[in-house]
Image (cartoon, rainbow, N blue to C red):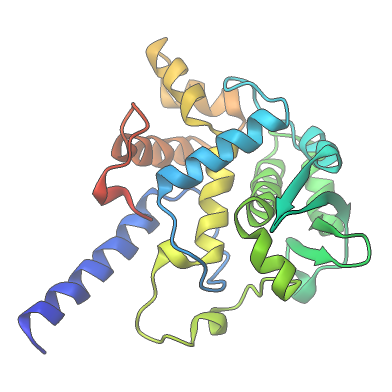
Length: 241
């Protein structure tokens, strides 16, 4: 192995480890499919736009049931065609907590939750299962916001490690649909603008966790990622997913 090749290998390993360190999400959903590479700053911007479109202010905590219901009022344009978004309780594949797919008949994206996940969502952020259910819903919304074109083409995005087997040994988190959707959920629930306002007001991680209805560990990881992005929102080279 040449020195340059070794350097590239170490760089790829570092990028993957760095993303795992800053990404929020109490459980890994595994690998998805390869999609166009996005930086954390780009995903942050998409999540902020989506949150604003739903009517949530930067400081406003997201209530899971409200998000679930309001998705039905949102449309998204894909290749010049306007598609709706539907939320629902569905029978998911392989007992997954949530699943997103494109329904050709209704010409809409479906962000679905299993019945168990929906029941947890009803509990709200005071319950750890409710917090995880909100993260799952945010993840499924992330697939629509980030991967609409892929969903139209494939109908569903497989949540399987085998989906990345076309390029073995070169796993790139920044091109993994599941990693991108996980980070989108983080940014949707704890927006950068809201975090900045709370930090400026002197709030600590525990205060922020209570406010946004997440676990303190999630806040710590989120703040680490935010520092790498920069408080001005500008992307730094080391903060690619």
